[in-house]
Amino acid sequence: MAYTGLAHVVGAKYSETENGIQYSNGFRYGSAVRIRIDPKYEDVSEYGDINSEDEEEMFAYASVTLETSEITQTAEKEVFGHEVSETGSASNETDLSEYIGLGARVREKRNGKTYYVAVWLYKVRLTEDEQDIETRGEALKYVTMQASGKAVPAYGGQWRKKEIFNTMQEADSWLEEMAGIGKEE
Image (tube, rainbow, N blue to C red; front, side, top):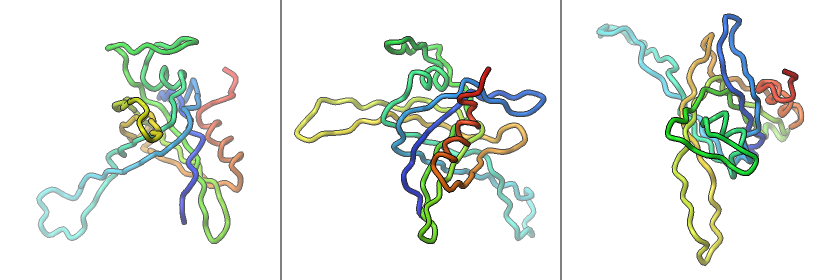
């Protein structure tokens, strides 16, 4: 199994109700470069039991790093809380990152057949990482936008879902449905 071709990063504002999880204001994030999802576990073995041979670990959170070639204005608003207009955005010291659902599609080769895996992180909070901008030197240098944060368990304990599809269109449709993109409000 080999994952290649990261694409179609989408997100939506996360909220919890008595009926469970809801997403709103679905958006496309920008052209994907890389996503890193690094699950972290905590030891929940019985404290002080020196006779216990079984170590027990439980999911705590996942470190998430998202690198894209751009961040859409809608993503700047929904992810980072920035004020946006038709011509740009403004960052303020009081801007707060909110929880979002975040998804992306990757291509997978298995036994010579191509599949498309849609990955959805139920509850993520991202913050902007540093931007390194420089003049053009002797060689062309591509600068990408990076955000990092944590995926935590959502209402009901879920933190990630993966679905496998035969076509990229099916995977993209599933991601857009998760984010509520195209849904009448």
